[in-house]
Image (cartoon, rainbow, N blue to C red; front, side, top):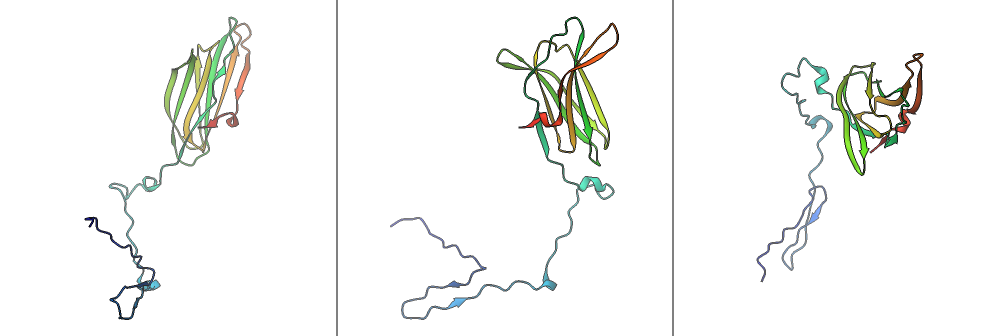
Length: 178
């Protein structure tokens, strides 16, 4: 005989039949009735300490998406200045923190070139300029909620006449979620 006990699972919402001894009639037990609308119990709202005067503290944190351009080749400068520009625009009604990472490929390895966390106020934009990347393969990663739109551009600056030429442009649709 086994020492393992077996317990039946009873769902109180479903009427059950109790087993009785042989020869006696089986009887049904009814499920407890649902409470009427006047008997519904509500729980009080739970607030963290110090949140009574800070209504924004009760909001849940937005889901943060990690988006990437994937690796792309930055052209050579040919004596002119090549810069990577990352633009972040906020369409949210509250400020958000955004993490921006730029990596380069060295052989089969990934090496971090730039990493920064920015606070972007509601309805504003931020611009980052990263230099010394010409001739390298780079990736731009942004960790931000969906209300933050990221774009990137590689520009060439001509010292002689002050002209700026956009060599590569990465639109928001070029940042894929991973």
